[in-house]
Image (cartoon, rainbow, N blue to C red; front, side, top):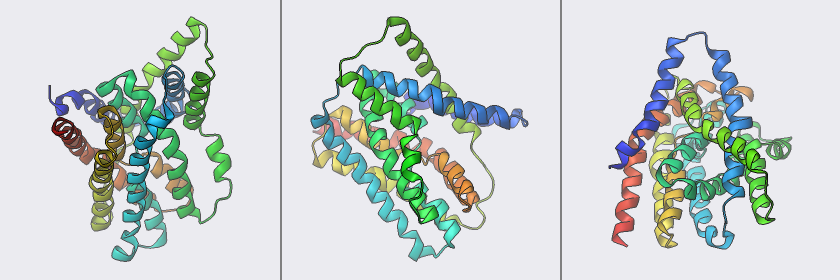
Length: 302
């Protein structure tokens, strides 16, 4: 089966979420509540169980982390070039810049689960756990030019807490009663389809407000340049196929929907963030299968 067909059910759920949002026009409260449920309960359950039950070799995982974080750093540098090239105003730049390197965790976990099953969830969630603090610090710093409260907010991030907690749980050799594991597994299993529906519901298909060149630059960075860097680093570091899958898929993910929320809350141009995120999610449905196909071809050639 081709990569595109393999990923079709997940992309179909995103489009179905978009349709549901338009069919039920007064469902803002529902989708807002669903996103909070996913973020604070369902995804943490998935991340905790996948890390608690995995036997993570941190020494072996280091090259994968270098590839993923190195590609993210490239996105930060290339995304910043939009400032001298397009000369946007400060609120517009701060809001859109984060979309050049922030990633949609929901889509990433759904796809790695489909492609590599439980074996891929642990390394991917480890990569998320390392990258989430980094990208959040840079995004907030750009938006506020201040580190006030950022470390306190990161310390309360449920995805980071669940990842670190699961790793420590596994390292210490702890265990839970079987019914507790079953509850956590059911909560985690519910997270992925609901998250993909929520991603679709968050899409905004309105005009770009005259920033087409700027949007195209940031999308080119996030969907082409960043995964290309991860691809190059993966083969330079001679990563195994699973680690390569994780690093390149992580780098090729479309921008995070939370970037829009952060921009609005911090008084930046939320419209530009919404445009980059929505266009990136839709274009990512085309670029992600291409990158995953390229990984398979590269692994075959080794």
